[in-house]
Image (cartoon, rainbow, N blue to C red; front, side, top):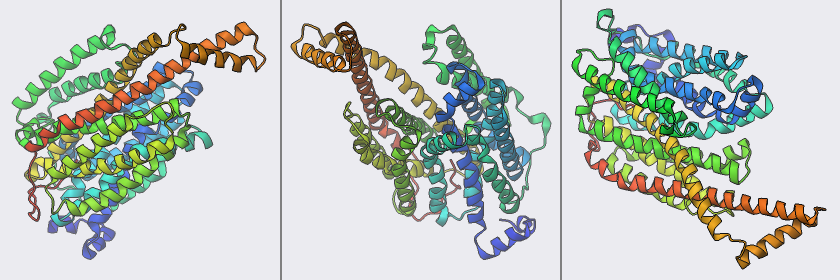
Length: 532
């Protein structure tokens, strides 16, 4: 920090600077903002049915509460570097926090679906900044020797958020009502605003040249990514390209993004600096980040759905199922922070990819008899293995860059992980539906009424229904319905096994990308601050 910046610090920040704990105060502040964003991605999932009933919405309508947030997120993330330069990082971070708090209050007070969706869009615009902008602030204020532990603490918030969200959302919805999943943001957000005002380094350089704003690039990015995220969120429900709506959005998104790339490469001051892709580590790391986002967020999506649909868990039980993995992530993150200073990050990512593939193949062994105990160790291992990729991948991707390019590269890197998660969930949702139909047809062919085993099973079911005061005909129909339900349940379990197996293969076949990542030599001071 320069002498000019130090002179502008608040009295408390100046005191912290003298005693050497100002970077840690900045880390805590940024982490509070980031965990608000990450938790809010998943916290609403368990409350959708309550919102639907309270607001009188259909299932497809209420899903826009999630879609609106995700669309706003992916639009704002790549713009954070430019907006931070233009308005000052501290000012922009505080504005984003205030926008997030205000929109959270509006979400909780919403009495119509339109107001709730609009508030979620505003919340997504504020939240996307809290994650990507915070990373740059943290690592620009930490010395190279301590960036690993700072990254570990911050990464812990990002990794544990998807596990905390459903648990917290289930508890608040069951005890206080769905509106409190938004009101809970207010006290944490206000504390984050006060800490930001107190400890964040002052803004020094801003680009105020209005004539140089890349409005064309911003517009094309908004349309292109907005349409793409909507396609990923709504595609399976509309049967993908069988829908005129999805087909139209695909054409618009493709044309807009192609024009966006052309625009950003030709203007002197682009809204998103795509030239950072000239660095081999950024290109390869961002490509692998898509796989990382798809695999990690996809598994976090699939496991709770499986637990609720087939193990009949409620929201609290599902959260408890994911809890041990989050604890493992915390422990592994702190231990790995030391290892990154002596081990090539690429080797750590490779180990994480292999371990995660092993976890996926283990989850692929699920059966209709699978219980919570069978999922415990695979999910604990998933929590640890994800850390091996999450922390070292960002170091290998952004570590070799010059400082001036870190903010732009981190925004693009964040975007690829966010889109990877959206791709993963969209692909898994589609695969689950398609593979269940395949397995259901296959099992139905095998369960013939002429088969001796089928007849014996059917007779057992009939006898059971007759014992509960059903007449023979009713018992026969109930038995056939129950048999059909068993087939559907078995097909569903097999489709989840297929999804987990595909995730494992994806991590294995993409390992060669790691060869292209940057090599951060242990003990050397990196050229850039790391950021997600």
